[in-house]
Image 1 (cartoon, helix red, strand yellow):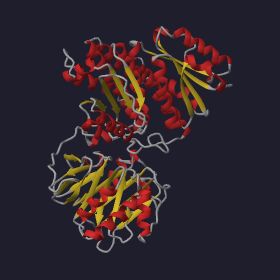
Image 2 (cartoon, rainbow, N blue to C red; image 1 turned 90 degrees about the horizontal axis):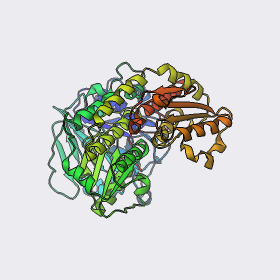
Image 3 (cartoon, rainbow, N blue to C red; image 1 turned 30 degrees about the vertical axis):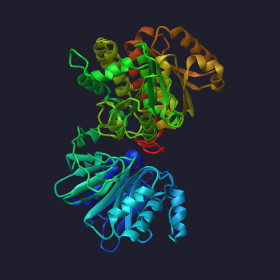
Image 4 (cartoon, one colour; image 1 turned 60 degrees about the horizontal axis):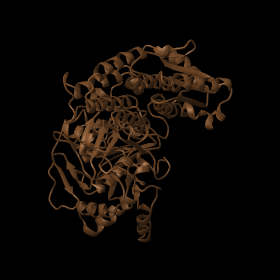
Length: 593
């Protein structure tokens, strides 16, 4: 959450900062701001709005050697101009941007106020700026002041700092919030993601927790908090390209990413199967076979993918539990004697999961991370790591990443039991997704009805219940329609009281085992006046079903079904005039608890 950019020596600094922030708006877009070094005082531009509004108030020509920018997802303080980043310390010595949350900011605020330091914002970030200035006045050394400040801060932060006494350097500090260095020629860059830097550099360094230092036009210097000598920097590349963030003719990233799902499956097959054998780490497969309890930890869409993964691995004979990460982090439960944890995160920087990792590390238990982001915190912290190879996902509402997670878990289960039938089955799924993508007029017709409603329900049993949860989340995320996903059998235990004349109910039917009971549930809601839309597999089709998708094996039927649900959410949001790629109050990468 929140996006940071910074640079030293960049030829067109204004362009880099503005365009970089545009690529990071998926991380937050409540307010935004820029700061440029200047001989008397930094030039600061801030606005409670989107990057295009910020761009309009920044002069076209800005002469500066150092600059920083920020797009905000508000935590402390309303999204107003005064609370927008960058923030400047009371004495004007430091100007900085911050991602993360400072847990002890209230006590630090009181301490600084008692020393007579004034505050003008509601943010925890201003506390950092003033604390840094206070420490600097004691030691008259920027790096020493940063080190002192880090020792006093509790919580998460990625800081990029302009020091008014030196317009040749940009300082930084990092703990539990992502921050990357981009190493260029006669210029160096900082950002909270690869995206802003892709057009400028090919070498990156992902800062680890409790590192700090500075970049200049020619130098990159990094220290570890406990150490006195500079850290060894090992640069790496990335498979991402600037083309990955282009819309390529699509009106929205969400639609583009929905329609990339079949390629995602192809990439996973290519990376985890060589035509003869599965390519998973044999030590990982052995660890899964030997464990007596698999514990999935995830949030949101990834949690819903884990529910599918639970069914897959239980079918392979394993005991499996699934927990919402934000709950398990505070109430850790381990029942096995030899447990294995599987953490699933699109970004690899999810704060709730990082909290869970601390517990797992304390217990000294093995951890597998499944993520879309190589080099992310969760990728680095794990004993084993599997990449999703889904490519960048810009839209806040996750689509192709869910497909990637489910597909990877299906491949992992197949490798565990040596079932190579999964490959032709997934190829069949790819064909089914292509057919689903031709059904847009039908999706738009249903969306026309949904767009006029304020409530909707999704029903299913077994795998279809799991996909109902994700379908419901997609609808509420981008349309703002209240929605619930329910198991068909629970309908009579309370929720049916909410069904009234015209209430939309979407029902998934993929499994012959549960077709009759779920169609009984269909009759129950019809009798109460619901407007029912049945989405069935071809072999289970009945005359009045609204949508029919191709048959694939039942455990994989969630993939064409979720594509239908993603399209329905997309077209409903379109008809309601919602901001599809950037829904209100949400951010893509949830890097704060």
